[in-house]
Length: 145
Image 1 (cartoon, rainbow, N blue to C red):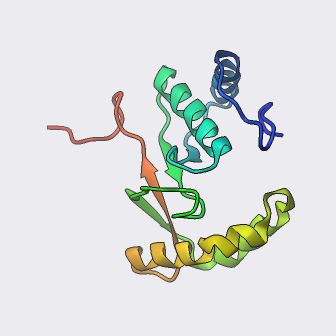
Image 2: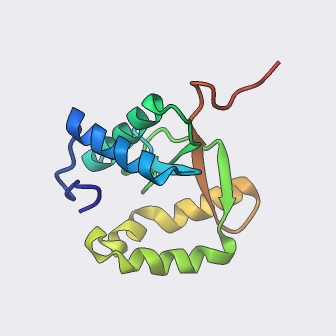
C-alpha cells in the first residue's frame, strides 16, 4: 500500500485526488516523479493521472517528470526530454529493485528493463541512463521571448 492505494486496486476519485493533493502539498517537493500515463498497467495510469491532476491544481508548481517502466510492454509512446547517466549506480539500482519483492523484480528486468537502461545510455552517449519526460505548461517550461 502507498498513499492509501492498494497494489492492483488503485483507483481515481475526487477523494483520492484530494488525498494525493494534501500529501504532496504537505511535502512541499522540489521535484516529483510519476509514471508515464500511456501504460498498459492500470495502477500506473491511475498514479500518473492523480499526480497530473495534483500538479494542474497546485498553486506552487513543482517540476514534474514522467518515467518509463518496461518500455514497449508497459510504457508506450515514451520520448524522453531529459536523461540521467546511471552508469555508476546501475548495479545499486538493480539491487534496490530486487528488494521490492512484491513487484516481481526478475519479471521487471526480464521484460527488458536492463536493455532499456542500456538503450537510453546509448542515446545519451554513456553506458546506462534513464530517460524522463518533463511536464510543461501552466507557466512551467517552454521558451521565453
